[in-house]
Image 1 (cartoon, helix red, strand yellow):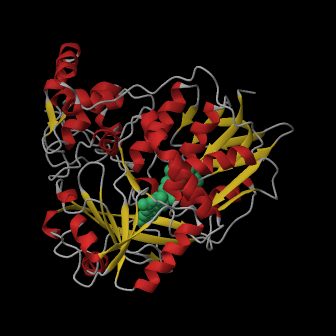
Image 2: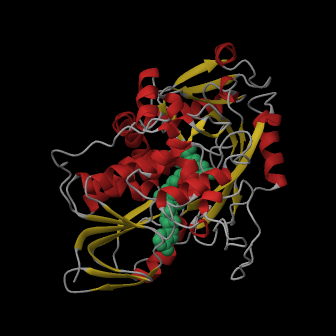
Length: 490
Ligand SMILES: Cc1cc2nc3c(=O)[nH]c(=O)nc-3n(C[C@H](O)[C@H](O)[C@H](O)COP(=O)(O)OP(=O)(O)OC[C@H]3O[C@@H](n4cnc5c(N)ncnc54)[C@H](O)[C@@H]3O)c2cc1C
């Protein structure tokens, strides 16, 4: 039998990654499995990126407790991992004093500091607040973070401290042996004493294979507009409408990269990450009720994410059917905020001692060339002149930055993976200029053929084969149309 892990975490979103990171930090031998080709490809890459203060969840629920605890853990976590984090605050705005006061009461029950702002005070901060807004509830502990960059950093830090990650793993069977589980995937067999099912919208698929409890999940799509850099000046903090039973409503928020997000919609029973014309119209109409004159001509991208909802609260429990299994179902909002606190709770459920190892290694600082000091830039250029070659013109990302991202502890082979680590392709042209250059750099650095480079997951190969007899060094600036299996030589 090969290595027996103390625990196997299935699902590498921000929740699975937080649990994995925590388990490695307390000295457990841990394996993180995901069917995708990178971490953070589910809900954790497509959300509002808000570290909620905790004014909204119903008091005494898991959501309320873990939100508030998670919010408190974020500043030191992001500092440790060098993940951009901005404590910009948030305000819930409306024209109904009674409802705002009820929300204040709920915030206070949850132990969340809040202040009532009148219209004049709101106008000082947000000059383009909608005309009907008369009152607001300001939450100073609300913050923003880049959710996928956080997930990547959690996983990288765990790897350098001894954690194992296996991606592109399709679970086939899980069998309970005498002292551990045998976990078979299409490619491998692993052994672990405990299993955490943190598979997000795939929770029930994994539960079925393990033989543990299934839960009734509702999938709710949320669509967004991304506005170009500088838009965050108009939206200096997160602006929410009053919440409804469908969620916190269409918000406008800055991002840590200087863009602004406007959304999300709430469309039930849909697992497709599509963006619809109706959805985008809804965002325009609803956001105008809080903030006027948002410039949607500055929209550079639209995207959507899927919330997995299970009743009114998170389900985080020991399986009653299979000893040694922990179930995490319905981790919708505020799951990103709660992730570090969920990790603490899971350690308790696993009955491990929450004491961090000594001599943990720190994650090296991965600084983009444009963010380096003059001296750091000179040193980087001396070490690797490729820091002098611009690949992504919009975001000013160099070839050296791309190579640095490919040499992070978790090895990836997708252009979206590079995008999440560097922002290459996230600017105004959305990768029009740099896409093929990124592919070429992945080929060179990974030593793989361009047919092996993915856009995101398996099945999204950027090319199918070669129609001309060229090597990756001749890789063209436009993608050739290729018919699988047919090669023509010059
Ligand atoms: C529109 C929207 C806005 C949101 N905004 C916020 C916000 O501002 N603040 C906040 O706190 N929360 C927010 N959330 C909630 C937050 O995004 C989620 O709670 C969080 O990302 C859930 O993380 P996760 O790791 O549980 O799931 P995911 O990120 O979905 O990860 C699940 C992982 O499991 C893997 N998986 C699935 N099936 C299998 C399988 N069979 N085998 C192996 N692996 C599998 C997937 O590939 C994926 O990597 C929002 C969510 C949405 C959708």
